Image 1 (cartoon, rainbow, N blue to C red):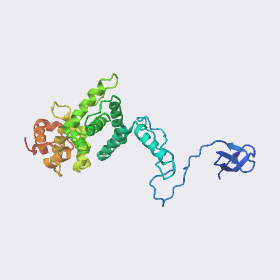
Image 2: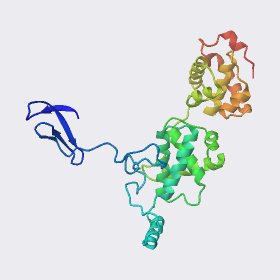
Image 3: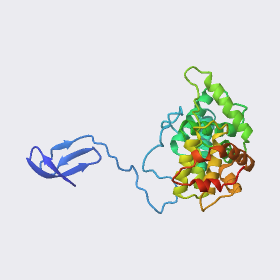
Image 4: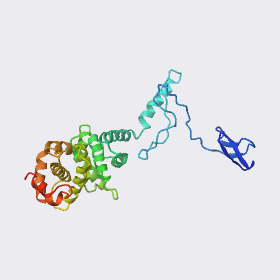
Amino acid sequence: MSDAYCTDCKKETELVVDHSAGDTLCSECGLVLESHSIDETSEWRTFANESSNSDPNRVGGPTNPLLADSALTTVIAKPNGSSGDFLSSSLGRWQNRNSNSDRGLIQAFKTIATMSERLGLVATIKDRANEIYKRLEDQKTTRGRNQDALYAACLYIACRQEDKPRTIKEICVIANGATKKEIGRAKDYIVKTLGLDPGQSVELGTIHAGDFMRRFCSNLGMSNHAVKAAQEAVQKSEEFDIRRSPISIAAVVIYIITQLSDDKKTLKDISTATGVAEGTIRNSYKDLYPHLAKIAPSWYAKEEDLKNLSSP
């Protein structure tokens, strides 16, 4: 019991809560101070030694706006040996065949969630990928296509839309066997298909080399000092017309910064961390080499250090 001011007693009195009626009463005069209040505690008691994995603290699961049947529904129980076995089993089979129109979407969302978890993506990216797949499913164009490639492509597009891009190679690792070519084709197909609907185009956004920098540096175990220098250098590199992919530029900037530090990284290590081939890093280094003095931060490397770098 707790205390509250009673308007009839004109003083602080103890309260009595009637959970069955939802009323709060004054313990001295019986005045109903609050009626029809909602009890937010659990409907059931949960015992720690129970073998069941279900926790009946609340009835029903969370609703999903992307599913038509996400509200509370009736489920026909399995037969338990009583006289109504025949009727119960027949109704159950009928329900399984006809009631769940979102079965395919539920499976797709589960697979996308698993892929997202393996990549360490935040919930907003997973939800965006679910939305993209739902729009695709609404147009009835997914039948007969590689579903794993479509799921992976939805995640790839969602990452770019949320400004947290991942490379096709990174996506391919968790795509349940779908190849880079299949994911690329699925991505182009999604953009083309959803772009046909007025006002429903898929904007992928622009990828910058800096979008990958922190993650690649973390994979290599670089120091905060070196990471800061790499981020500044990659921003300066955008001022020059270097016709390389953002991922390649990120890889070569990391190579340059590590060569200017005591903790040098080999091309093989950088290639493994970034997914960029060693030959591509070498060729990108040739393009970036003439601009080293303007790209490398002056507080990180002196002119003498730049001259000690190997020429391409």
